[in-house]
Length: 247
Length: 353
Image (tube, rainbow over all chains, first blue to last red; front, top):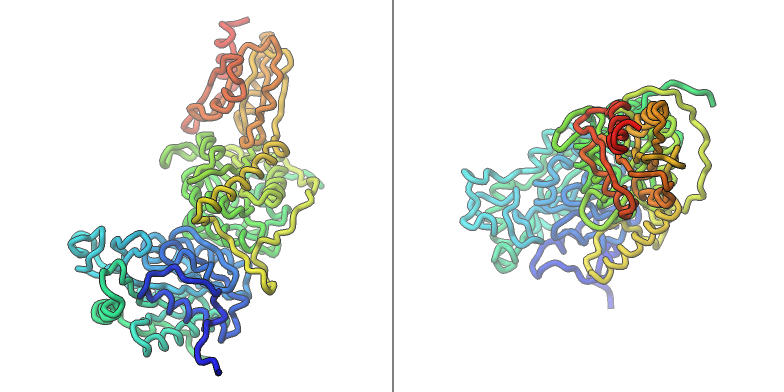
């Protein structure tokens, strides 16, 4: 019998802790497949964050750090400055990156640190039980915005890729989604490109991946994908915001 | 080597480079700025990297990244900035990463002031961040001692896989003294087989981590770390005991203040009063053993500090209820004068002898 589908060798053979219907699993696979296909898996260094992705160090089959909340970009900076030829990437959620880790992220980009940020945006704090995130949409309900996020009271969600693409140190910034197979394929293309930018020493690269959180959104997995498409994409438009010029 | 005149902050940098420090992550704060400035100038010439972080938090997490990759790495700050680093120091201890952290302390709480103070004693000797941990703390009293201890600190950090703190103050950082860069006795250091490497070794996944989600794994992790602390307490305690034999009063003072006490000792001699000095060089582990033998003539211990009284807690533990433990402190950036210590000693002894 021929093998038609198998676990990527970039991931360790163990069960993931994510909730049923969560898109983290897809994103993990895309990152691992990309690194394997580019021949970078053995050399990769993963910086795990705090939140649902806290255990990513267990799943990727490479060396790893577990960073404190929001500081992954700073840890990646310290690591990459020493391990110049290894592929250093962080894997962070929106609470970790866009709230507590804003300074570390913005300045890693501004310095043009030659690292890759895998930024998973599901518009909510998942691990802690569904609190409002910096990316929670106006009107979206969360346990700390029970009546829906109010722009007057809680302000507006942050568009990270747009913000970082204004910085000269950012070489590559693209927002993708994993709500259907066509977009999953586009997401993988962006992830591969981001790692290629790092290999070519072109500077800071970030891929923002719109993701679902069925558990804390209170929707079943299928409705979650639909909610992402109908609500997140209009506010967080997909596409490339910055890419190095081809020589 | 010849002696040279150097400012404390710059001498720290020179000593770190001599000790093989290759990475320095800095952030400006008075009174330690000459150290990151020196490193930005000198480290690249010595094959190293200086990087200015976006904050003290950024800097200490860059230290986490570089230390995890096996580099000899340093960061520095002053009191409010060291407070910001505490989260990172806790993680460094949890992940057992070696590094050297310099605190040229100033007064607090809050923004406090920029003059020398010793109000960070608790922060330095009681962990400072969350969880069960300590860090070795060296408190130099001269620029020469600073230079010697910085080099020692890197070896201690590597030996025990722990952050090590150099606790100076604005006086140590800012004053100039003559120093000699002696070759300190090299320790036999363990291989950093736990660290990430430039080139990956097949089948040996490395993880730098302080997360142990299962209590039955976290407890042994802490017991292992505290096992190292037991060895540090046994092997690394350093102190100086001066003039204590037959002393009327024994002062306990570290860093800048210990020099003032030495001047007070001379002045009191003229009045026929003998003041002794116990000078902790390691604040953690605290030199409890220095208090074991007390002359029958000694009537009290006197903790002299540039704070409202912090080390006095350790002096009381060391004294174990045997003698009265008195305190003289000038906080807020005031450096006490020798005569103030003289007067306090006379007061303890019930007026002029």
